[in-house]
Length: 173
Image 1 (cartoon, rainbow, N blue to C red):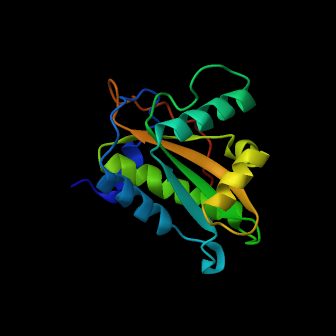
Image 2: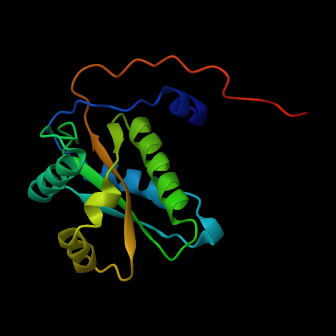
């Protein structure tokens, strides 16, 4: 089993997936890691919507591509999308949702799955049809899209690490 530090240091964003759906138990573990993320004042403002339905996944992809101004699949063919939303009444909702996404990326890597945080969830989830969808799932109040985590089996090689930019740490002793 890899150490926590090894998982952190070797995780990469994956941008090519097989169409096979990950096992439900692995998706559940990834979600469990997301729900365990730290949150401001323990308000637990983040919620996760696991989209494994191909039709809804494809609608999300199309709307995300429209916001991006491109025609290609911004989800890179990944079959599963974990949409992270956060209740806007929590003062740290954006940070809480970001931590949720970070935990889930690490959990996916530990399980041998690829993942990639896809932006534009804020713009997509603000659209009336998606606001109705959020409400139809039973979430009351005002939620903002924080990010979409695409998850799946890698199609090809795991990405190589990129060079780290220098000068990003200063000690003040």
